[in-house]
Amino acid sequence: MLIAAERINSSRKRVAQAIEAQDGEFIRNEARIQTEAGADYIDVNAGAFVGNELECLKWVVEMVQAATKLPLSIDSPDPAVIEGVLPLLKRPPMINSITLEPARLNGILPLAAAHGAKVIGLCQSEEIMAESTDDKVRLAGQLVESVTRAGVPLNNLYIDPLVYPLATHPQAAMAAMEAIERIMKEYAGVHTICGLTNISYGLPERRLINRTFLAAAISRGLDAVILDPTDAPLFAALKAGLAVAARDDYSMDYIAAFRAGRLG
Image (tube, rainbow, N blue to C red):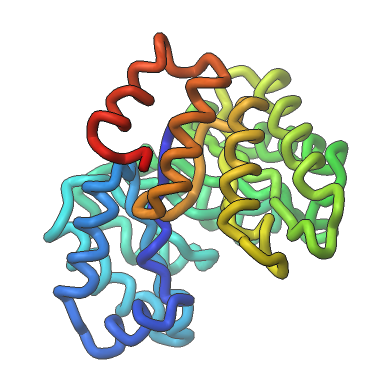
């Protein structure tokens, strides 16, 4: 299961402070600990620095690539920022993210095609942010069509069905999981991904909700996730969920995680 590590995000106060102070060691350490915790991609975001996002993100990319050989997930809605960062990357990245809004779709897809990048596609258009299962699947189909037309291989598309907080949308988890299952069945080769923590916003014991939702979503076919791999109970739930869903032959990855002390 692909893990995009989420900790280097300027919405986190400590990360924003490090970017502002050019505290390279803090950013490098964040990259190192997420790499050691099992990440496949390191997500990098400097969106809090409106007007200076590109220069800040370039610096973050430089720091992260000095600390890890993992590819990066470039997290920005601005095609100009994505375009400005891509030449600095040492490995084909993931782009986080596109929507069906023409400016983002037309601005980012050609870049993804040219650079062999994976791309996260949100089930969102100018008219709608999909809440129901049917809307999520319908917009997923439009993303598939758009990506295919742009020359991006379908196996480079990671569809995010959008996960809403249970506190305000009681059916949010079921709608997202049903959409994941249908998308994975209807569009062979495509992937699904989600930003996990939104599901628990506004609830007590948020990490318990996150773990439970992750394990359930894995059973529906979710094959990528944006999370903090240093969260030990969450990582354990991921490994257990894959084993229970028959996606870990003979539970070998689960056993390896136990032997490495990652399940306690």
